[in-house]
Length: 422
Ligand code: TYD
Ligand code: ZN
Image (cartoon, rainbow, N blue to C red):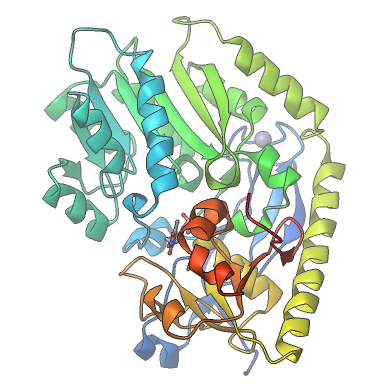
Protein backbone atom coordinates (compact mmCIF):
# COMPACT_ATOMS: atom_id res chain seq x y z
CA UNK A 1 0.00 0.00 0.00
CA UNK A 2 1.34 3.41 -0.96
CA UNK A 3 1.85 5.39 2.21
CA UNK A 4 1.14 8.87 0.90
CA UNK A 5 -1.68 10.34 2.95
CA UNK A 6 -3.67 13.31 1.75
CA UNK A 7 -4.10 15.67 4.69
CA UNK A 8 -7.47 17.42 5.02
CA UNK A 9 -8.05 20.98 6.26
CA UNK A 10 -8.23 21.57 10.00
CA UNK A 11 -7.76 24.39 12.49
CA UNK A 12 -5.24 24.50 15.31
CA UNK A 13 -6.72 24.91 18.78
CA UNK A 14 -4.72 27.80 20.18
CA UNK A 15 -6.69 28.37 23.37
CA UNK A 16 -8.10 25.99 25.92
CA UNK A 17 -11.82 25.49 25.19
CA UNK A 18 -12.61 25.60 28.89
CA UNK A 19 -10.55 28.51 30.30
CA UNK A 20 -9.22 30.28 27.15
CA UNK A 21 -5.59 30.03 28.30
CA UNK A 22 -2.93 29.63 25.61
CA UNK A 23 -0.72 27.57 27.93
CA UNK A 24 -1.34 24.26 26.17
CA UNK A 25 1.10 21.36 26.18
CA UNK A 26 0.80 18.59 23.57
CA UNK A 27 1.54 15.21 25.15
CA UNK A 28 0.31 12.69 22.57
CA UNK A 29 0.12 12.40 18.76
CA UNK A 30 -1.97 9.58 17.31
CA UNK A 31 -2.25 10.71 13.69
CA UNK A 32 -2.46 10.98 10.85
CA UNK A 33 -5.85 9.25 11.00
CA UNK A 34 -9.04 9.61 8.95
CA UNK A 35 -12.24 10.83 10.62
CA UNK A 36 -13.46 8.15 13.00
CA UNK A 37 -16.93 7.69 11.50
CA UNK A 38 -15.96 8.19 7.85
CA UNK A 39 -16.81 4.65 6.72
CA UNK A 40 -16.33 4.12 3.00
CA UNK A 41 -18.46 2.50 0.33
CA UNK A 42 -16.74 0.26 -2.21
CA UNK A 43 -16.75 3.10 -4.80
CA UNK A 44 -15.19 5.52 -2.32
CA UNK A 45 -12.25 3.17 -1.78
CA UNK A 46 -10.98 4.13 -5.22
CA UNK A 47 -11.32 7.87 -4.58
CA UNK A 48 -8.89 7.97 -1.64
CA UNK A 49 -9.62 9.67 1.67
CA UNK A 50 -8.39 12.48 3.86
CA UNK A 51 -6.25 12.07 6.97
CA UNK A 52 -5.73 14.52 9.83
CA UNK A 53 -3.20 14.92 12.63
CA UNK A 54 -4.59 13.86 16.02
CA UNK A 55 -2.75 15.66 18.82
CA UNK A 56 -3.87 15.91 22.42
CA UNK A 57 -3.17 18.87 24.74
CA UNK A 58 -3.12 19.41 28.49
CA UNK A 59 -4.01 22.93 29.67
CA UNK A 60 -1.39 24.04 32.18
CA UNK A 61 -3.84 26.61 33.54
CA UNK A 62 -7.11 24.72 34.24
CA UNK A 63 -5.86 21.14 33.59
CA UNK A 64 -8.39 20.47 30.86
CA UNK A 65 -7.49 17.86 28.20
CA UNK A 66 -8.56 18.22 24.57
CA UNK A 67 -7.77 17.75 20.88
CA UNK A 68 -5.57 20.29 19.11
CA UNK A 69 -6.88 19.70 15.58
CA UNK A 70 -10.35 21.03 14.89
CA UNK A 71 -12.32 19.66 11.95
CA UNK A 72 -15.23 21.81 10.63
CA UNK A 73 -18.35 20.36 12.34
CA UNK A 74 -20.37 20.04 9.13
CA UNK A 75 -17.77 17.50 7.96
CA UNK A 76 -18.30 15.37 11.04
CA UNK A 77 -22.04 14.97 11.47
CA UNK A 78 -23.82 15.08 8.13
CA UNK A 79 -24.50 11.40 8.33
CA UNK A 80 -24.01 9.56 11.52
CA UNK A 81 -24.10 5.80 11.84
CA UNK A 82 -24.35 5.26 15.55
CA UNK A 83 -27.77 4.49 16.97
CA UNK A 84 -28.36 4.52 20.73
CA UNK A 85 -31.04 1.84 20.54
CA UNK A 86 -28.55 -0.76 19.28
CA UNK A 87 -27.22 -1.58 22.73
CA UNK A 88 -28.94 -3.06 25.79
CA UNK A 89 -26.23 -1.72 28.11
CA UNK A 90 -26.91 1.78 26.83
CA UNK A 91 -30.64 1.43 27.34
CA UNK A 92 -30.15 0.34 30.96
CA UNK A 93 -27.84 3.29 31.52
CA UNK A 94 -30.41 5.73 30.13
CA UNK A 95 -33.08 4.28 32.40
CA UNK A 96 -30.75 5.21 35.28
CA UNK A 97 -30.52 8.75 33.98
CA UNK A 98 -34.33 9.07 33.82
CA UNK A 99 -34.58 7.77 37.39
CA UNK A 100 -31.96 10.31 38.58
CA UNK A 101 -33.79 13.11 36.77
CA UNK A 102 -36.91 12.32 38.82
CA UNK A 103 -35.16 13.88 41.85
CA UNK A 104 -35.20 17.23 40.09
CA UNK A 105 -38.74 17.10 38.68
CA UNK A 106 -41.65 18.64 40.59
CA UNK A 107 -44.30 16.06 41.36
CA UNK A 108 -47.71 16.37 39.76
CA UNK A 109 -46.68 18.38 36.73
CA UNK A 110 -45.61 16.92 33.38
CA UNK A 111 -42.05 18.18 32.84
CA UNK A 112 -40.73 19.46 29.54
CA UNK A 113 -37.50 17.66 28.60
CA UNK A 114 -35.15 18.69 25.79
CA UNK A 115 -32.45 16.20 24.77
CA UNK A 116 -29.52 17.72 22.91
CA UNK A 117 -27.97 15.26 20.45
CA UNK A 118 -31.11 13.15 20.81
CA UNK A 119 -29.97 10.51 18.30
CA UNK A 120 -32.80 8.06 17.49
CA UNK A 121 -34.91 9.33 20.40
CA UNK A 122 -34.18 6.41 22.75
CA UNK A 123 -33.74 8.58 25.87
CA UNK A 124 -36.77 10.74 25.11
CA UNK A 125 -38.95 7.67 24.62
CA UNK A 126 -38.13 6.74 28.23
CA UNK A 127 -39.03 10.24 29.47
CA UNK A 128 -42.20 10.17 27.36
CA UNK A 129 -43.22 6.86 28.93
CA UNK A 130 -43.02 8.75 32.27
CA UNK A 131 -45.50 11.28 30.78
CA UNK A 132 -42.99 14.06 30.04
CA UNK A 133 -43.36 16.40 27.09
CA UNK A 134 -40.26 15.93 24.97
CA UNK A 135 -38.27 17.56 22.20
CA UNK A 136 -35.13 16.23 20.53
CA UNK A 137 -32.37 18.28 18.94
CA UNK A 138 -30.31 16.22 16.50
CA UNK A 139 -28.03 17.53 13.73
CA UNK A 140 -27.69 14.21 11.86
CA UNK A 141 -30.46 14.19 9.27
CA UNK A 142 -30.72 10.42 8.82
CA UNK A 143 -31.04 9.74 12.56
CA UNK A 144 -33.39 12.68 13.26
CA UNK A 145 -35.77 11.21 10.67
CA UNK A 146 -35.78 7.85 12.41
CA UNK A 147 -36.71 9.53 15.73
CA UNK A 148 -39.55 11.51 14.09
CA UNK A 149 -40.92 8.34 12.51
CA UNK A 150 -40.92 6.83 16.00
CA UNK A 151 -43.06 9.65 17.38
CA UNK A 152 -40.32 11.78 18.99
CA UNK A 153 -40.55 15.42 17.83
CA UNK A 154 -37.02 16.30 16.70
CA UNK A 155 -35.43 19.51 15.43
CA UNK A 156 -32.80 18.70 12.82
CA UNK A 157 -30.33 21.46 13.81
CA UNK A 158 -27.06 22.03 15.68
CA UNK A 159 -27.70 23.19 19.21
CA UNK A 160 -26.32 26.66 19.91
CA UNK A 161 -27.47 30.03 21.19
CA UNK A 162 -29.49 30.74 18.06
CA UNK A 163 -31.39 27.45 18.03
CA UNK A 164 -32.00 27.79 21.80
CA UNK A 165 -33.96 31.00 21.08
CA UNK A 166 -36.05 29.20 18.46
CA UNK A 167 -36.88 26.45 20.96
CA UNK A 168 -37.83 28.89 23.76
CA UNK A 169 -40.09 30.85 21.39
CA UNK A 170 -41.87 27.79 20.05
CA UNK A 171 -41.91 25.43 23.01
CA UNK A 172 -41.00 27.36 26.19
CA UNK A 173 -38.25 26.57 28.72
CA UNK A 174 -37.58 22.98 29.76
CA UNK A 175 -37.09 22.00 33.41
CA UNK A 176 -34.72 19.24 32.27
CA UNK A 177 -32.08 19.46 29.55
CA UNK A 178 -30.12 16.31 28.81
CA UNK A 179 -27.05 15.66 26.68
CA UNK A 180 -25.49 12.21 26.60
CA UNK A 181 -22.14 11.88 24.87
CA UNK A 182 -22.47 15.15 22.98
CA UNK A 183 -20.80 17.61 25.31
CA UNK A 184 -17.32 16.52 24.22
CA UNK A 185 -18.24 16.99 20.57
CA UNK A 186 -18.93 20.70 20.76
CA UNK A 187 -16.37 22.97 19.06
CA UNK A 188 -18.28 26.17 19.87
CA UNK A 189 -18.48 25.38 23.57
CA UNK A 190 -19.29 28.99 24.52
CA UNK A 191 -22.17 29.08 22.02
CA UNK A 192 -23.45 25.77 23.36
CA UNK A 193 -23.25 26.96 26.97
CA UNK A 194 -25.00 30.24 26.17
CA UNK A 195 -27.71 28.13 24.56
CA UNK A 196 -28.08 25.99 27.69
CA UNK A 197 -28.25 29.04 29.98
CA UNK A 198 -30.84 30.69 27.73
CA UNK A 199 -32.96 27.57 27.36
CA UNK A 200 -32.91 26.23 30.93
CA UNK A 201 -35.75 27.14 33.26
CA UNK A 202 -34.54 29.17 36.30
CA UNK A 203 -34.89 26.17 38.60
CA UNK A 204 -34.21 23.58 35.89
CA UNK A 205 -31.42 21.01 35.69
CA UNK A 206 -28.95 20.30 32.91
CA UNK A 207 -27.88 16.67 33.06
CA UNK A 208 -25.06 15.44 30.89
CA UNK A 209 -23.02 12.30 30.52
CA UNK A 210 -19.56 12.08 29.17
CA UNK A 211 -16.56 9.79 29.18
CA UNK A 212 -14.51 10.53 32.31
CA UNK A 213 -10.89 11.60 31.99
CA UNK A 214 -9.92 9.59 35.06
CA UNK A 215 -11.12 6.35 33.43
CA UNK A 216 -9.42 7.25 30.16
CA UNK A 217 -6.11 7.68 31.98
CA UNK A 218 -6.45 4.80 34.42
CA UNK A 219 -7.36 2.24 31.73
CA UNK A 220 -5.28 3.74 28.90
CA UNK A 221 -8.40 4.08 26.73
CA UNK A 222 -6.48 5.98 24.07
CA UNK A 223 -8.71 4.73 21.25
CA UNK A 224 -11.57 6.85 22.62
CA UNK A 225 -9.52 9.81 21.42
CA UNK A 226 -10.62 10.98 17.97
CA UNK A 227 -11.56 14.24 16.29
CA UNK A 228 -15.25 14.10 17.20
CA UNK A 229 -14.24 14.05 20.87
CA UNK A 230 -12.73 17.48 21.35
CA UNK A 231 -12.74 17.31 25.15
CA UNK A 232 -11.88 14.74 27.82
CA UNK A 233 -13.64 16.04 30.89
CA UNK A 234 -12.88 15.92 34.57
CA UNK A 235 -14.86 17.67 37.31
CA UNK A 236 -12.25 20.30 38.23
CA UNK A 237 -11.98 21.92 34.77
CA UNK A 238 -15.75 21.56 34.32
CA UNK A 239 -16.30 23.72 37.39
CA UNK A 240 -14.13 26.40 35.75
CA UNK A 241 -16.25 26.14 32.60
CA UNK A 242 -19.65 26.34 34.31
CA UNK A 243 -18.50 29.20 36.53
CA UNK A 244 -18.00 31.33 33.43
CA UNK A 245 -21.69 30.84 32.60
CA UNK A 246 -23.23 31.34 36.04
CA UNK A 247 -23.81 27.63 36.57
CA UNK A 248 -22.90 25.21 39.37
CA UNK A 249 -22.28 21.47 39.37
CA UNK A 250 -24.71 20.37 42.08
CA UNK A 251 -24.11 16.63 41.83
CA UNK A 252 -22.01 14.14 39.87
CA UNK A 253 -21.51 10.40 39.82
CA UNK A 254 -19.36 7.85 38.01
CA UNK A 255 -21.18 5.42 35.73
CA UNK A 256 -19.71 2.37 33.95
CA UNK A 257 -20.93 3.16 30.41
CA UNK A 258 -18.40 3.71 27.58
CA UNK A 259 -15.42 2.50 29.57
CA UNK A 260 -16.19 4.82 32.50
CA UNK A 261 -18.20 8.03 32.36
CA UNK A 262 -19.57 10.76 34.60
CA UNK A 263 -23.18 11.88 34.93
CA UNK A 264 -23.20 15.53 35.96
CA UNK A 265 -26.08 17.63 37.27
CA UNK A 266 -25.85 21.38 36.68
CA UNK A 267 -28.10 24.20 37.87
CA UNK A 268 -28.14 27.97 37.79
CA UNK A 269 -25.92 29.48 40.49
CA UNK A 270 -27.34 29.90 43.93
CA UNK A 271 -30.21 27.42 43.58
CA UNK A 272 -28.66 24.30 45.15
CA UNK A 273 -25.48 23.51 47.12
CA UNK A 274 -22.96 21.09 45.57
CA UNK A 275 -23.28 17.57 47.01
CA UNK A 276 -20.62 15.60 48.87
CA UNK A 277 -20.19 13.53 45.66
CA UNK A 278 -18.79 16.58 43.90
CA UNK A 279 -16.32 17.25 46.71
CA UNK A 280 -15.24 13.59 46.75
CA UNK A 281 -14.65 13.49 42.98
CA UNK A 282 -12.47 16.61 43.15
CA UNK A 283 -10.37 14.94 45.86
CA UNK A 284 -10.13 11.76 43.78
CA UNK A 285 -8.89 13.69 40.74
CA UNK A 286 -6.22 15.36 42.83
CA UNK A 287 -5.19 12.05 44.36
CA UNK A 288 -4.77 10.60 40.88
CA UNK A 289 -2.71 13.62 39.79
CA UNK A 290 -4.99 14.72 36.94
CA UNK A 291 -3.44 18.16 37.54
CA UNK A 292 0.10 16.98 36.77
CA UNK A 293 1.57 16.89 33.24
CA UNK A 294 3.67 13.85 34.25
CA UNK A 295 0.47 11.77 34.43
CA UNK A 296 -0.07 12.49 30.75
CA UNK A 297 3.48 11.84 29.55
CA UNK A 298 3.30 8.45 31.27
CA UNK A 299 -0.05 7.84 29.55
CA UNK A 300 1.62 8.54 26.18
CA UNK A 301 4.34 5.97 26.99
CA UNK A 302 1.69 3.39 27.90
CA UNK A 303 -0.08 3.99 24.57
CA UNK A 304 3.12 3.19 22.65
CA UNK A 305 3.51 0.03 24.71
CA UNK A 306 -0.02 -1.11 23.81
CA UNK A 307 0.71 -0.65 20.11
CA UNK A 308 3.81 -2.81 20.35
CA UNK A 309 2.13 -5.53 22.44
CA UNK A 310 -0.97 -5.73 20.25
CA UNK A 311 1.18 -6.12 17.13
CA UNK A 312 3.23 -8.86 18.75
CA UNK A 313 0.08 -10.72 19.84
CA UNK A 314 -1.68 -10.52 16.46
CA UNK A 315 1.48 -11.42 14.59
CA UNK A 316 1.91 -14.54 16.70
CA UNK A 317 -1.69 -15.61 16.06
CA UNK A 318 -1.35 -15.04 12.32
CA UNK A 319 1.91 -16.99 12.23
CA UNK A 320 -0.11 -19.96 13.48
CA UNK A 321 -2.36 -19.61 10.42
CA UNK A 322 -5.39 -18.56 12.47
CA UNK A 323 -8.23 -16.21 11.50
CA UNK A 324 -9.02 -13.01 13.40
CA UNK A 325 -12.05 -10.74 12.96
CA UNK A 326 -12.95 -7.47 14.65
CA UNK A 327 -16.17 -6.94 16.64
CA UNK A 328 -17.82 -3.50 16.46
CA UNK A 329 -17.06 -1.00 13.69
CA UNK A 330 -16.69 1.64 16.37
CA UNK A 331 -15.37 5.16 16.01
CA UNK A 332 -12.64 4.19 18.46
CA UNK A 333 -11.53 1.34 16.21
CA UNK A 334 -10.51 3.96 13.65
CA UNK A 335 -7.95 5.37 16.09
CA UNK A 336 -6.85 1.94 17.29
CA UNK A 337 -6.49 0.29 13.88
CA UNK A 338 -4.85 3.27 12.16
CA UNK A 339 -2.49 4.11 15.00
CA UNK A 340 -1.48 0.46 15.38
CA UNK A 341 -1.48 -0.11 11.57
CA UNK A 342 -3.77 -3.12 11.79
CA UNK A 343 -5.40 -3.92 8.44
CA UNK A 344 -6.66 -6.88 6.41
CA UNK A 345 -3.32 -8.61 6.85
CA UNK A 346 -4.47 -9.26 10.43
CA UNK A 347 -8.26 -8.85 10.44
CA UNK A 348 -10.47 -10.60 7.85
CA UNK A 349 -13.46 -8.35 8.49
CA UNK A 350 -15.26 -6.39 11.22
CA UNK A 351 -18.72 -7.43 12.29
CA UNK A 352 -21.30 -4.84 13.36
CA UNK A 353 -25.04 -5.11 14.03
CA UNK A 354 -25.75 -1.60 12.70
CA UNK A 355 -27.31 -2.06 9.24
CA UNK A 356 -26.03 1.38 8.12
CA UNK A 357 -22.43 0.26 8.70
CA UNK A 358 -22.65 -3.11 6.99
CA UNK A 359 -21.09 -3.59 3.53
CA UNK A 360 -18.93 -0.51 4.08
CA UNK A 361 -15.18 -0.35 4.80
CA UNK A 362 -13.32 0.89 7.88
CA UNK A 363 -11.71 4.35 7.55
CA UNK A 364 -8.02 4.25 6.65
CA UNK A 365 -7.36 0.53 6.95
CA UNK A 366 -10.26 -0.47 4.65
CA UNK A 367 -11.36 -3.59 6.49
CA UNK A 368 -14.77 -4.80 5.21
CA UNK A 369 -17.69 -4.53 7.66
CA UNK A 370 -20.18 -7.38 7.76
CA UNK A 371 -23.31 -8.47 9.58
CA UNK A 372 -22.80 -10.65 12.70
CA UNK A 373 -24.51 -13.51 10.80
CA UNK A 374 -21.26 -14.00 8.88
CA UNK A 375 -19.51 -14.99 12.13
CA UNK A 376 -21.50 -18.20 12.38
CA UNK A 377 -21.10 -19.11 8.72
CA UNK A 378 -17.34 -19.38 9.00
CA UNK A 379 -16.22 -19.18 12.56
CA UNK A 380 -12.94 -17.27 13.08
CA UNK A 381 -10.44 -18.41 15.71
CA UNK A 382 -10.15 -15.03 17.42
CA UNK A 383 -12.35 -11.96 17.82
CA UNK A 384 -10.67 -8.64 18.55
CA UNK A 385 -13.07 -6.64 20.71
CA UNK A 386 -13.14 -3.22 19.08
CA UNK A 387 -16.32 -2.38 21.05
CA UNK A 388 -14.56 -3.38 24.31
CA UNK A 389 -16.91 -1.04 26.21
CA UNK A 390 -19.68 -3.58 25.56
CA UNK A 391 -17.45 -6.60 26.26
CA UNK A 392 -19.80 -8.25 28.78
CA UNK A 393 -22.86 -7.85 26.56
CA UNK A 394 -21.02 -9.12 23.47
CA UNK A 395 -19.32 -12.11 25.14
CA UNK A 396 -22.68 -13.17 26.58
CA UNK A 397 -24.44 -12.74 23.25
CA UNK A 398 -21.76 -14.71 21.41
CA UNK A 399 -21.38 -17.45 24.02
CA UNK A 400 -21.58 -20.06 21.21
CA UNK A 401 -18.26 -18.68 19.91
CA UNK A 402 -16.25 -19.42 23.06
CA UNK A 403 -18.10 -22.72 23.51
CA UNK A 404 -16.94 -23.70 20.02
CA UNK A 405 -13.32 -22.97 21.02
CA UNK A 406 -13.02 -19.35 19.87
CA UNK A 407 -11.16 -16.66 21.85
CA UNK A 408 -11.83 -12.99 22.47
CA UNK A 409 -8.94 -10.52 22.45
CA UNK A 410 -9.08 -7.25 24.32
CA UNK A 411 -6.87 -4.46 23.00
CA UNK A 412 -6.72 -2.27 26.14
CA UNK A 413 -5.50 -1.59 28.82
CA UNK A 414 -3.17 -4.52 28.15
CA UNK A 415 -3.62 -6.46 24.90
CA UNK A 416 -4.41 -10.10 25.64
CA UNK A 417 -6.74 -13.04 25.28
CA UNK A 418 -9.73 -12.91 27.61
CA UNK A 419 -9.28 -16.05 29.70
CA UNK A 420 -12.76 -16.80 30.99
CA UNK A 421 -16.15 -15.28 31.47
CA UNK A 422 -17.34 -13.98 34.80
P1 TYD B 1 -19.72 2.52 20.52
O1 TYD B 1 -19.29 1.63 21.60
O2 TYD B 1 -20.65 3.60 20.77
O3 TYD B 1 -18.38 3.07 20.02
P2 TYD B 1 -17.86 4.42 19.38
O4 TYD B 1 -18.38 5.55 20.20
O5 TYD B 1 -16.39 4.19 19.50
O6 TYD B 1 -18.35 4.38 17.96
O7 TYD B 1 -20.27 1.64 19.32
C1 TYD B 1 -20.56 0.31 19.48
C2 TYD B 1 -20.60 -0.34 18.12
O8 TYD B 1 -20.63 -1.74 18.29
C3 TYD B 1 -21.84 0.02 17.32
O9 TYD B 1 -21.50 0.21 15.97
C4 TYD B 1 -22.74 -1.20 17.45
C5 TYD B 1 -21.74 -2.31 17.65
N1 TYD B 1 -22.27 -3.39 18.44
C6 TYD B 1 -22.51 -4.63 17.82
O10 TYD B 1 -22.28 -4.78 16.61
N2 TYD B 1 -23.03 -5.64 18.58
C7 TYD B 1 -23.30 -5.50 19.90
O11 TYD B 1 -23.77 -6.46 20.55
C8 TYD B 1 -23.04 -4.25 20.53
C9 TYD B 1 -23.30 -4.04 21.98
C10 TYD B 1 -22.53 -3.23 19.75
ZN1 ZN C 1 -7.74 25.59 30.40
